Length: 312
Ligand SMILES: Nc1ncnc2c1ncn2[C@@H]1O[C@H](COP(=O)(O)OP(=O)(O)OP(=O)(O)O)[C@@H](O)[C@H]1O
Image: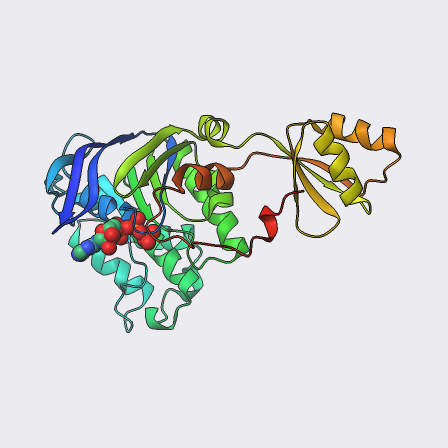
């Protein structure tokens, strides 16, 4: 279990992490989310004992990471998968880590097999693709068979097959009773993988909740997407019924708020308006995240094309 209490990190006038409190529990994958610059990597580095907090504490199973006699057995980490000696093979990289941490050599082959790098294990790591480096980083994190994992952007550089593999791996690690903390900007994937969410913005905690509760609490009112060759006429009809209507992706598409899909369908039928699509939009983590963090994004585009905001 990871316990973060009052954790704060200042870089001169910047409060990169500001009085954070949260817990990462065993048996769950906890997604650690926040816009660019929110303080995720800084928090993870402090949890791992790589950066000293300005104040507050971060413990792994009751002690700071560095206070564990064999840190690799207490917590596995993936921070920067590219930080490898380019001339060293995956096997030698892992053998060196194992030797330095009292881990038997046979464990190296086991973790190489888990991450699917067995056949490339003797090649120099400098020749690896980003996805292979990520796999090697995961192998290193698993080397000590730790009960706690801290993984910063583990999905970076993975191809679709790799992403599915990572999802299964993370779910499997949690199912074995481990505490798994994962940061990612890939909201669709986070939605499919994690049980619990910790969301930060500008260094501060803005949500600490289950995935389902987060989406329910931070999603806009339900929307219905409608496509019709008579979109403009239908938009006026819907507006007369009290719906808010805006243009969707193209001239035939509308996004309707304030009426359910059956009501929208019934109105179209009553007017003899042909529909090519009628789809309630499922609330998603991506929408919920954008809605919650729009005020705390440090780097945000100030204006879009406006196309999706056009109303009738
Ligand atoms: N060594 C440092 N010196 C000064 N400022 C730093 C340092 N490291 C991080 N920061 C600042 O702290 C804040 C948090 O950065 P951090 O890298 O933790 O964010 P992040 O959430 O991981 O971002 P991203 O999603 O872009 O990786 C940023 O404003 C960053 O510029």
